Image (cartoon, rainbow, N blue to C red; front, side, top):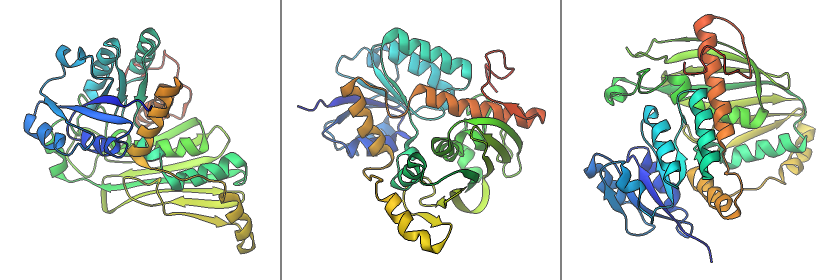
Length: 355
């Protein structure tokens, strides 16, 4: 019989997207609690839960963590609260799901890895954009070798954010938001890039604030040298007239481009263009082995359930979140100093404890 894990979602803002993912897997999860200091907002989200009766809790406190009927704590709090909330939940014997960015420094993620080892619990960072059928087809071409050598990739996060977005006071701040457009907005597309192309070897970057009067960057560009020798060019802005999330990868045998939903760019449609029209039949055959399934939060949570049952690594690991934070750290350091930054970063790096 399939076990249903009982979940407490902490934070009723982005937590609404997580609830949609759990609702899509009613045989696997039961969202039992929505926790938010704004109890009216929590109650409104609890009413959207379709996995079973859902209670409201006002505070992330010992009373919630001590509940023996909760298996998973799902943290959807502002970024500066993540590290403490994760640690407390793990030490309370819960498995944990946490929104991006996982924490605000490499030191914090390394400390959390130690807590995971100490407690034996599972921590799964959220990178739901990895779970799309379009990206899965691109990954199939890469893993099978059909794509051939990668030449160049471009990642465009061109979004729009006005003053109304920053009415939530922690946004646009270094102390509470922890970063700007590269951290809070482009992080998903950049994670998709590395999920497809592999590790980064070296970065250079420039960032500035031009769209809104905030503390953090809202425009920037970066160049990445990947470990395989290919080049990736990143551009990020929150001042675009329209909104685009586009990943384009030019390879020896095919060019791959994903530009589906702005906030779910791993979904279809993706375009796969062979180097010559005569190669279309070959490309169709190469793509035929790719699998499709649920996407986004629904797929990540489905795979998380499978991992919990098997006692295996979750579909997104702490090590993968660390790689994302390492890239962010290197980009911020490169932008501040004007230097090219080599990865990996050592614990004696100036930004190891935060950027």
